[in-house]
Length: 114
Length: 524
Image (cartoon, rainbow over all chains, first blue to last red; front, side, top):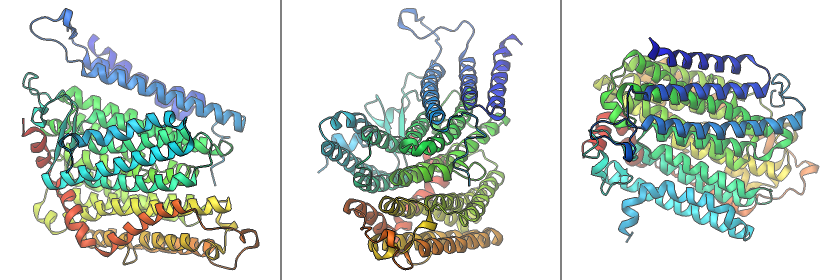
């Protein structure tokens, strides 16, 4: 039961993220929603990788027998970096939009609609 | 003739060369603009040559495997790893090779075109870095044999493409389009990663071949497949997630738009690769096949009906890309729907897949050509509104001829290449379900109608006084367009040659997941 708790948090975070993306009208808050969604997947990957009593494959700690394969941690790290880049680019777009349109409300950002 | 070093490392160089070129181009650009232009041209030429070499090797010697950090490809699974391929593996089969050919060909033409069309913009150091990065990431998506690497390249392509879409700013409108594109890509990417996590949690593997051998079609696998299809269908601009396409395609510089067509085909390639190769041994073919068919038919119909009333020339063409994506989904979807049945697969399934795959190649060529001609027109007259164009045929004869070639090809008129692939699709889909084939033909007629309208309002009519001194597009832009139009004509005139030597091996590679598995895992 207790071991499933992180997965419950994953689902909650994902739902919060999706709800933020769908319901908020403020561009910056929508970008937060994407970040929360990304975090939920990161937590999911870390949860998958957790082994009780597992030993990290670092040479000074290495026991003779079994260690944890650190692939999911590598995935998580990569995704954190990608997430930072995406968030930074989205926020910088939001800054330009605010400067040009004078608003970050997505109902008013409609120059491209015909 | 070619050094052994290059032959044995070609798959890695295919990604490495444009990546290196991308990050060195701002440095070279400090010297002078001409030095940068030469550098970018040299890098794309080298990438193109390596791309053709890799494709040649993959077609003649069978699936290419490249393992980073191992002396030979046979070491894809290290002996002491307990049967898990922990190294980074590139896998190029005939389908990947075909896609690589398409990417480097279009990439080369658009870079040549871009050297003059975008030469007077500011911020070019970032422009060419992002452009080469985009090409490298697309090549990476085709070459990789690993789910997570595919995700990383997908994200690189999203970031680079979003930066390029927003590059012109255009009073904020281009940034709005870039943000929309990036938002769809980021959310799609997160779903894709979730699917990877689900698969990894069950099978402890990320290698596509390794996973394909173990996949069980459990409810979790089904969920993962749905997430993958949703993410990649959004990225390739299929209905109902197509809303970013017209914005991004119309706001990006023309050369970027032509490349974006290839980028969206890369997501389409991923969709087909994962449906066929990853899930190929376990899938309930009918349901997923029909899902792709429905997405395809919706994209075709919605795309073309939205295209007809458009006034902006690039927006109109963007809706046509949505509609053309539908043809590919339809063709390959029919192949997937009958994949389990050898008799049906032999009688029309493979033909449908050949049509769909051939259409990917053809679409990249003629769609790229059309966007480039639109870019030439916009460069010369400064507007993309078709109501304000007219009589340009008097001054831009070559652009007009190139536009006609592209327009006839997209409408499926012989002897251009759109006819060849659409004919394969009509013929085989008719055997599967006549109604779908009739829809495809009607869409094709509407496409023709729409392009006749464009042709008439842009090029025909008397010369307008405000455009009296408009001149022909610059030479290097014409060269870029001429390469693409030449290929449109050649693939249209000799379709049997291309189908037999390039398309059929690709379709068979896609239809035969066990061959892919044997190539990657069998050697070890």
